[in-house]
Image 1: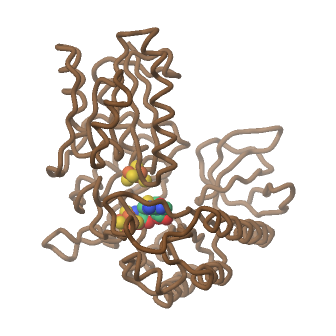
Image 2: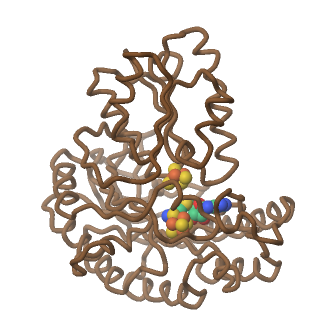
Length: 435
Ligand code: SAH
Ligand code: SF4
Ligand code: F3S
């Protein structure tokens, strides 16, 4: 018997699919390369933007003919879209061939749901309205994403940014016990993982739900960095309202922590930030960037931006555009605002038309493209940390801590860390010599 999991959305979902795979393999299912060969097909869904939901519906629809060819195929839908209000009824109505729907709060129950369906062939819809604690995992089948292992540190989100559906589909913030996190990381290091990425919607609020206020994100970073072994730590995502100087210093002072910070700004306009309920100002954000650059001059800084939030004027957009020009990000993920039902921004007046959104995102992407190019050019002559991936055409393809590809001259061993000196940026590729 074989399974196939199709994952949409963020790293949280990618990691949760690894837990689903763990459950399926403990039931003796083997991984299939495509849905056609699978006895169980799972869609782990996302609902962050309408476009994502549309794409998922297209993907679920395409399963209809596979199910016709193989009526015993079991189709399960889970994740954030299943969890969102009204979606499970809609999915069953639109796709009557779906067998099981469950939400984000009862992911750990998948094995039971599947067994139950196999026993009595009754459609199952089991979406819990609330999270019920934290379930420590027994079996995770990790994807072979090059040498990186995801580790949850906190679940859910309390921030209620006015555009965002995550707090409604992921529940309130819950932090994992740091001892469980450290134990999991120790196991990963001893099994050879070179990167550990600590995951949370807002890693900086790790521990806010603990009575012991000394257990915070900086504390956790230090604890994980104390683990013996040749590995590095990454984390995502940081919220600007909670990123502390202590965390920045901890990153700066610790060789094991990658100098890579994803710090979503969302908008460069104070008026829009307020309407987004982001709880920081442009000035506070720029202060953080200054602090990061003071302690970590070579930090790789990336961000998320939403264009076309309700009421965003051309002037507001230019505030964002100019902020991007000032910060000179190493990476920008830009999105057009998408109305999510249930969120505050859904019913805000002055919704922006699609053409304006497209024009703004286009201008922003043009700008970020030219900054990225300049930044790559500036890397020439610099020394950077890399991990060796594999040999291609006599060169070694390597990856920086931030995920950039560099082609290195020299004999390297895959999955080992090295330092290299960048010699050339040509045809959008970086080349380097081993040090
Ligand atoms: N917890 C993270 C990531 C949330 S989702 C954080 O707080 O940064 C990832 C990104 O999707 C967000 O940073 C935001 O830029 C974008 N996003 C969220 N809701 C959106 C919406 N309704 N429309 C467009 N983009 C959205
Ligand atoms: Fe969404 Fe804001 Fe929470 Fe991020 S911090 S998940 S953008 S509500
Ligand atoms: Fe999407 Fe859920 Fe992540 S809505 S972005 S998969 S938390």
